[in-house]
Amino acid sequence: MDVARVSSSDDEQRLLVVYAIQRLLALAPDEETLLRECCALLAQYRHYRLVWSGFAEPGGAIRIVASSGAARHYLDGVEPRWDDTLAGRGNAGWVIRRGQSRVVRIPGPWNLALGARARAFGIASLLTLPLRIEGSVVGVIAAYSDEVDGFEEKESRLLEGLADDIARALQLLRVRASAADEMARSRDRLRRLEAVRRLFADIGGEIDARRTVLLDEGARALGMDVAVVGSVEGDLLRYQLMVLDNVASHPGSLIPLERTVGGIAIAERRTCSWQDLAAEPGLEAEMNLRARGYRCALATPFEVDGRFFALAFAAHAAREDPFAEEDHVYVELLASLFAQFMRDNRQQEQIRDLRTLDQLTGLPNRANFEMRLAEATSARDAQQRPFAVIGLDLDRFRGINTALGFAIGDRLLVQTAERLRSVLREGDVLARTGGDGFGIIAEARTPEAAADIATRLSNRLA
Image (cartoon, rainbow, N blue to C red; front, side, top):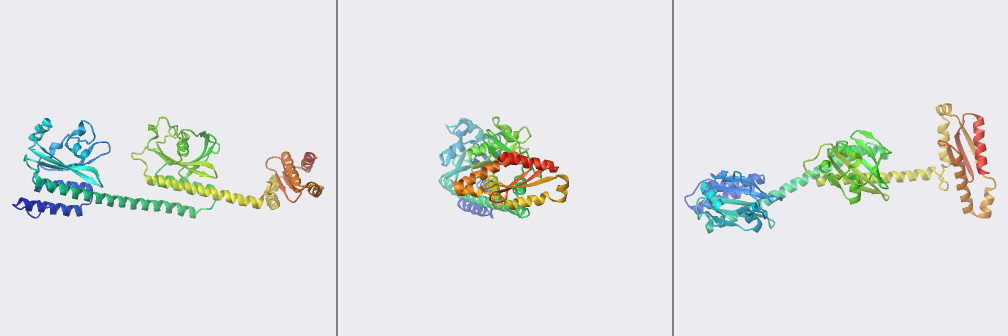
């Protein structure tokens, strides 16, 4: 940006610099451009030997963002700090800690070494000003003059006003950047949710199918290589592992819960993340993640009907930056969806049980028995697996209900079911087909084998 003209009047020149910087404050696209152009304008039109600006970093360093002027190499090798250390007791550090502007004339009794270096670059005085945003000093802007009285009262007021204007412009840029970031996060959130919604709309309601979609889509959206669902069983964690499209189910895989990524998330009741598992020597990562070559992980807990679970994702490469809050929110959303699917699935199973199971004995009811009998009598099964169909009922059962009461009658039915079940083999079907009637479908290759099963059942009830 250029100034239209340079007046011979110093006052007019000050006004032109203010005008030029005000235009810049309204048009600068980002913080670095703003500070770079402001430094250049002040160095050129106020004839300063050097103008520089920097931000106070959390660790105590001052990051120099922009510098301009004939003496800009004065900053070569300089690493200013603002913390209360020996290196942070310089002029810029003092201004940031105190929040006050400061004029220094060279040479001065406070720093002879600075005086020698400054004179070598033609610097006789300097003014350092704080940049405040919402009451906090975020950085400084400093001007260096070749005149000992280069910053008399009028000049100091001019620069103090400009520093306040620059700080307000920085604040506006940060508000705009924050709004843009939030819009980007919102778009990313909607994109992720839409992807999950679309995929769930294309599949059935089975919990396994939805688990597969959830793990796969979650891993892709997060840029991770593996997804895990783990359930707590005492002090152990039972898990299912998915490597993107390939599900590797380990129903018997149990690992100690303590010091696993899922276990830590469950214990702390919050989402936890690790940029680099190798930097956590005390962490025995879930499924021995480190031994499998995984370097970063993200895990969140969830609860279904009083039972705890963990949803976790991991990748082979360590992350340079921490996981974003948006990643945590996304994983928590996936976990809440999965928890809801599990609840819905359990409710569906309970509804199916009400329709197909006898509520007193827990055995299949008559409709369930007839369905299984139809399946067993299909042509292929009948040829490959001969079976017997046995029906039995209890004589004089009504008299027991009348004489001793229905509660005793119910206990008798339950005991009868348990005794019949103890005789049958795994794979045989035992059902309650009526008030005191039971039906059995049992594997029997010959009529003699069927008779033997019936005899054993009768003897067990004797």
